Amino acid sequence: MIIDCHFHVDETMLALEKMIVEMDKNNVEKTALIPPFNETMYEKESTYQDNLHRFFRFLIMNLPKIGFKIYDGLVKDGYFKVNGSFKIFTEPNNDIVANAIKRYPDRFLGWAAVNPTVPESVETLETYLNLPGFIGVKAHPFMHKYSIKELDSIGALCQNRDIPMIIHLSSEPDSYKYLPEKYPNLKVIYAHAGLPFWKSLWQYAKEKPNVFVDTSSDYLTPSIVRNVVQVLGYRKVLYGCDGPYGMKRFNEYDYSDKRSWVDSLDIPQEHKEFILGKTFMDLIKSTDLDFIQNR
Image (tube, rainbow, N blue to C red; front, side, top):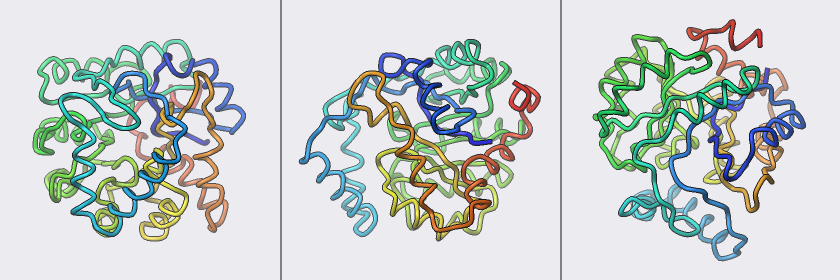
């Protein structure tokens, strides 16, 4: 079973019906949905922006202290400043994910998003986690601008429930170590191959059985995905897209792009199957597997 572990549902950009058509074309059986964290954001066709992204990746990989300053500057005054300026949602709407699962329970799973600085977001979290199809918690210290320590109670909750967390990290020093050290049985997935720490995080994750990364987002490239698989091994890396971001026009999302990053890896096909879904299925095995497998 191929599962995309990281995709935002935003029908202002990509209708669910069109999404399912593209999933079918690429043999993706299920997608784990996340509510949008920012307003509609299309990619602009710009050589300048493409070169800027390449330079940013170079800095993060080779001169991280400089790269971190640029990275931190992408979020300012409640706006995400990539290819424009886009309002960040302080409290992402989990109802969007719940409704998508209700409409297509055989195709979609759900991450319940939380912002620990908003009491209502924390108070309603378990309500969503108790709904069919929800498999874990998404947190975004980068966009919501908080210390990883703010996720203490959420980490404890997820460890107790034996469900994973997926986290988009800020540049807070060593923040990727905090939750795995405090909650060693917590299953943590660091989004976008562990951006912005990449190399240092990969070395750390090698020794931590419950720390994983995903392949999602145009932050990455095929070579970065090859590198992380080489360092961590195929059982620690999970397939994800981060769609619908990266789209240039409504309803035109190319699933084959991120899928090709895995397909092109020079590893046996049976190893690719772990990246494409086997490992993720194991991470969510404590949730309602009858719902996941039999729909």
